[in-house]
Image 1 (cartoon, chains in turn cyan, green):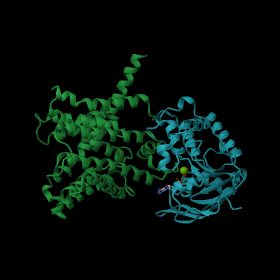
Image 2 (cartoon, rainbow over the protein chains, first blue to last red; image 1 turned 120 degrees about the vertical axis):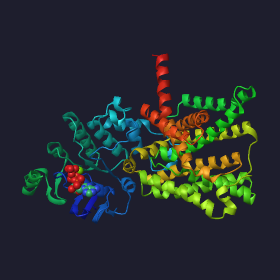
Image 3 (cartoon, protein in one colour; image 1 turned 60 degrees about the vertical axis):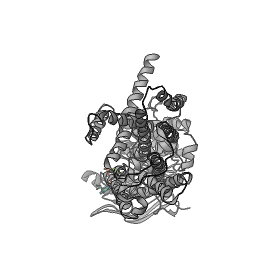
Image 4 (tube, rainbow over the protein chains, first blue to last red; image 1 turned 90 degrees about the horizontal axis):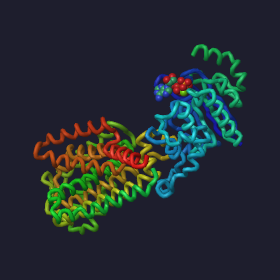
Length: 242
Length: 320
Ligand SMILES: Nc1ncnc2c1ncn2[C@@H]1O[C@H](COP(=O)(O)OP(=O)(O)OP(=O)(O)O)[C@@H](O)[C@H]1O
Ligand SMILES: [Mg+2]
């Protein structure tokens, strides 16, 4: 069986800056991988290339063995990848339920018009990420950073991904919220979800991942079990330097 | 966002009131002059709604709306006046051709957003303006436009009925449509297009739908407008003042609401009418900026929002 997601020699250049420098790795179905590295290491850029929001300069991206480089972002989402954003990007004049509604929508104009929203499912998703019933009709401006991240998770889950790319899920969250999201990730893993998680909060990340990939200046500098990667000389140096 | 009984009742009331209004003319409570002003407001409401679907929702601000209205108006005018096509055919054809125009206007929206898109649409308007003057003036009437176009109504009362019915039905149709998830998706594009794509939706197709719907309404409005006026004057049609009237009506009424642009159109038309004795010239248009600014500072959601908040307060007072 082929890997669920496979990057081969991925390169992304922004003018003279090499944001992704020949990165290769494989993610197996049901695996959870931490993607770590100092600021500017190129973690978010890799997510954006996997989603098709940024076009890679060169290299390959395979999803379930299929080359997805020519697919649009919505087409990739339909094939089962979903991501959250480091800086949450909600629809600011819509309440929580309506935000989730957009994620739940089928990409079919006819159905959008003739089939009503699934209010129960919207609510279920909102509550499952730990938003409270009182939040459902709030707009993003009335939510805390933690709640915005949960909303981001809920909208991504609404598209029913089988692989989730989470970018800095824990930033700005309280201890309680971190464990709540951690539990949610655990439950989703039990259901077979595959994860690629970017986080600066290493203690929070550790229990959630099978292994880690460390990046520095666009380059993969280590890969392996969490402890091993943490002990790696290059990884330590990159964090100290960054 | 759900359609509520209360909303439907309001629409029913609005339509019934609108259809009964001419009775007030018979009894002399309102003059024929006022009725003619209302007719203008009805047409402006159609144009403002059509702009609202296309631009108010998606955030792709068009400064070239007369481009679409003009296609509808000229198509039916030429077909009926030069080729003796019956209006039953010419109007649907005009609407279809306008929708093709909508697709053409959509092409720049594939690549550009924001102010540059607005500029390009302005260029589109200027382009058709030049085209109708230069190519085949024998068909378009060139700079002087056309007159003697078939009219569908005689007198103010008939004109009123036609324009009101068209406006109310179109408004209700668009309002219902925008209450569905399609409306939600189009609004979402206006708020954050990337997140819509990130939710797995084909934003290109959604925007195309918005443009086609806007063009549909603009073409319908434009076609009926020429058959109400019986003439077409390119200088008044492809005029930046006309563009501003449409946009300001939609904005002060409340963008992305459909009903807002209707309020806005009536408000603006009557305002201009009452200002006419005081400010007869184009200075009146300066007032737009002022009014728009005032409404915006007080309530960016426009008249629609002001009314909504007011009603909410009344309801709270009634049953606290
Ligand atoms: N659109 C862009 N244009 C130019 N340079 C970019 C762009 N996006 C990212 N970069 C650069 O690419 C490098 C990698 O950025 P990226 O956002 O992927 O880092 P990151 O690992 O996610 O960092 P952080 O931990 O701060 O989120 C940085 O030097 C960044 O400045
Ligand atoms: Mg990042």
